[in-house]
Image (cartoon, rainbow, N blue to C red; front, side, top):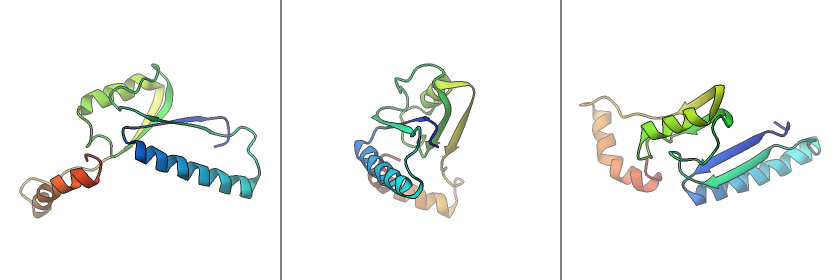
Length: 125
């Protein structure tokens, strides 16, 4: 934080990115009020885009963080290839995903029943 780092956020949902911009602006104001102006503020670039084709250069990122992405893309393999391509050698990939419960379990039945609604309210997830 505060070392001139660049964070690039990519999401296919422009509304989510607008909310992120609002949150970032609020946090920066709080940070400035509490700590004074940062010498080298963190730069944030938010882009409406596609996880399968980010447009970022090869070996661009020190780290990639993905949260609940793989459930809502056309090709999980393509996303993972893109992550590998944009990571610098030795870069880190951090992710949080969710999975379906075991086949034949009551929880899986509930997931299967609720899945169509979930796709509508959770951006395709």
